Image 1 (tube, rainbow, N blue to C red):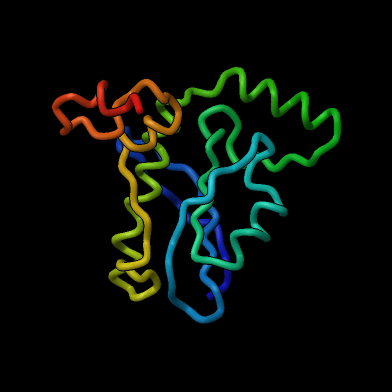
Image 2 (image 1 turned 30 degrees about the horizontal axis):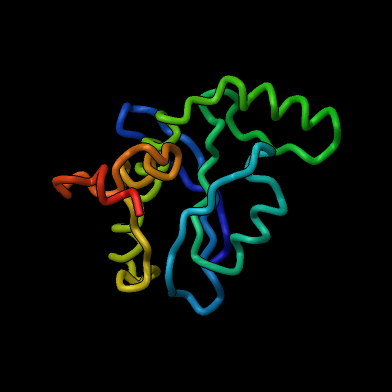
Length: 146
């Protein structure tokens, strides 16, 4: 299947683009590849093309479909986007992108047994180490200290 841009509906009614790559073998594990500050540019897409990857454009709420290079001017532009970037909203957008996994499983492109899936709470934990790794644990604060 040829890699392509797909629409990703969000839980708050928006839509944004994500790059979807399916390897030549046609099936396998899937991952969500998160962009650098330069957008889902050619180097990101080249990485994605070797696996089943969805690479959502996380700056879509600020500047849809950006693709920056590594020049000083592009770096300055990327930094201005980063200053306005809403991490919490982005975590929700990533969760919405992961929701597409069920569709990929249903059409036989994604092996459900090989796909690491993490929900919103796990994603927030990656951003903030102070959050519990498992809120179901009664004394998580004590267990986090070794």
